[in-house]
Length: 374
Image (cartoon, rainbow, N blue to C red; front, side, top):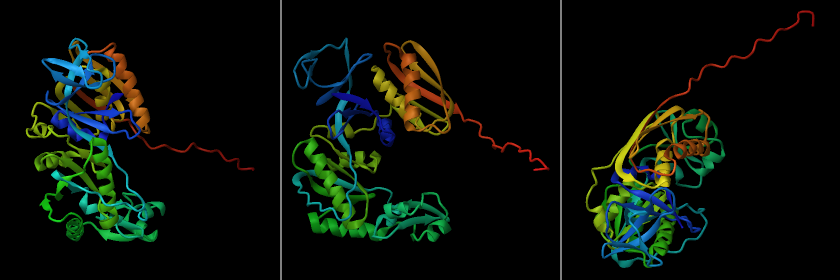
């Protein structure tokens, strides 16, 4: 079973017209689609329902698993499958990770995530990266001592953390290059990382597991956090790697590299703390509109005014989000308001919002009267 999803970390991919769907399997892999009708197509229902994978043959969509014809009255193309994604964690320093073998086809991109903030994660001590008198990044041991991002440099020093200056980290990249040469031979230097000739063997699920394992080995060997992308061509790997979040690995299936060959200029995305907007290809399923609204309003607080341009006209929704609301409460309030506005379903091709932040005044302590004869 597939469900539309859109983690905030993957919101930059929406600028290419992408959509994200979550697999209900235990691995929670995500399928990324781009506008197009080549290869495997993701069908979304008009209104309510669950998406499904399909193949197009002789002008008809057929379910990828059963071969049943899917009527265009009920189903609409949500784009072609352009990549498989998985959010990968990091193991402990002492956990053994076996080497990853690559077969002689395609290319694998390793792109360093936030290179200037990686020195704090190297070594066995409690390390922090400082810049401008503030803490910019910490490792797990420093966080366990109570050092938080944004704290003053003197506070981190008082808690016994090792201070590192923020910089280009050229030595870290050189160490990664030497390690890759020892593991895989010749590599190609690209902006922010390296290209390795070859990709993991097996299907998408097996390749995602191998990339997560490779990411863990790089972290154990060099202390660098990388995002890994395996693709049939180097160009498609680089295009996806530029927008991929640092905690993800991705596989571009064979035949989908053409989807990454051109930029889609019809989608416009703007996201901020007090206003944002999206304009792109029409979304016909309620769940797709809902997850997009939740991602856009993830940082909104106060009185939020949401406007949705649909085939029923402009729908206006007002959502009250408290200042102290967490992620779950924000998503719940947005879901309730959007579902009530959409009703049984309607296509939407533009969303815009702005908010009035809540007024935060100084709370004064109540005046206490003290009896003089007490």
